[in-house]
Length: 423
Image (cartoon, rainbow, N blue to C red; front, side, top):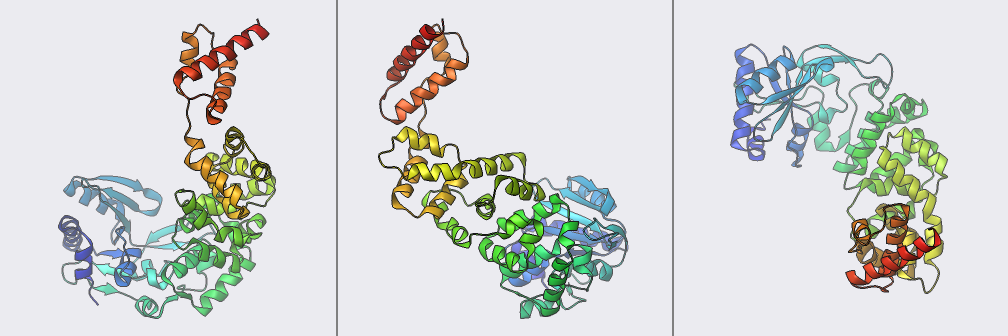
């Protein structure tokens, strides 16, 4: 099989020129150079993918430096794994790795590497469909190398590991099996499924660092078919294996997330699904789960704000005759993903109407005055500025003031009153 035509259709003549020159340079030095992994897989499947990963014999870093010097690019080196990224002037990036084999000192650990031939390099990969290589050599340009049956598994739609120790070596492959399986509509092959179950039962997920677990979950949460992926993770026990709080899932709530995001004109964001998984959890348990996934400080603050405030917000939104400023006060304590979860959880028309009012109108209301205007009126800056400006904003939300002059007049009266109360 030859994929040169598909490759040329995917990339510009300039990039194709880079790739062919890389192949010629390697051959001239008695080395081989192949495109490997996901790009080869997606070329065969007809999926969009422009991530170029090269594997070369004789050292990846030295080869990356050679081609970068020729093309006017620069190199970012990852020395422990003989890999580098070549950043090209036109904005393209090419990853280059030396052909290698790997040894895992313990489950979940980063591998130790040694130089090896192409077959051994492909053998270390996760699944047969990712153990394919496309030659850039001038003698066999575009030829596909498939030592482990990846082409047949692509044809049949199978996710298959290369060897029985695959999940022991790298338990994050459990998550990738789910992601690739659902994305491509493939079945996890029976032996691989048994190995997955055994790995989960053996507690191998506990061996993976929070940073690596978080990275795998972010990739899943960014996928178009995130709900089926989460369901499959739950079916394999992988969510509970990360942390028990991730195993208690309100599926009806999660199924409502896409439509609630659309209704509120919110961007689709994986955090909404993760927050939905933890929606009913106590704050302490949710915090532990967030730490296990290495959520950023900002994400953890959003999660705490959601879990601490959503029940009170929902209770308030049930009351009739709420002033707009009260709706604003209640909902402004929540991250925007929390609005979508309240929409999906409640289902009540009055609450949804208030969510729309907040999202489309109230959250956009801003004052025309600032603390500088209060200074110009002769007041000394202090904590009273924030207090007064918040009260003026509430008045504007309730349409008690309309113009800048109204705002300034009200703020002046409030500041004067505070001055009298606290001379």
